[in-house]
Image 1 (tube, rainbow, N blue to C red):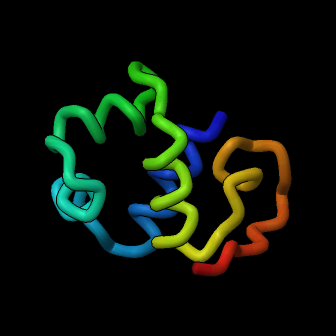
Image 2 (spheres, rainbow, N blue to C red; image 1 turned 45 degrees about the vertical axis):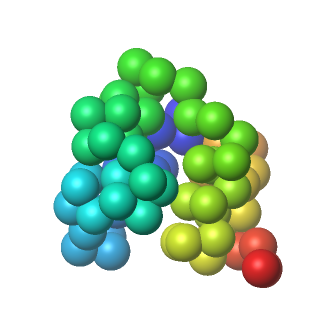
Length: 72
């Protein structure tokens, strides 16, 4: 599922949960729950993560194996 991908992307980017939470303007605990699949990621946050990591939302959602980033 997508929560594994956002954790993997964060780790690969050498970022902390706090750094990503700050980028999303949310608390670290909220972001941690996104990563662990304990809380559904809002669409706005999914889009922001896709832009941040230069991947598609389909990749984050596990609908595609191709990272294919979005622009904007």
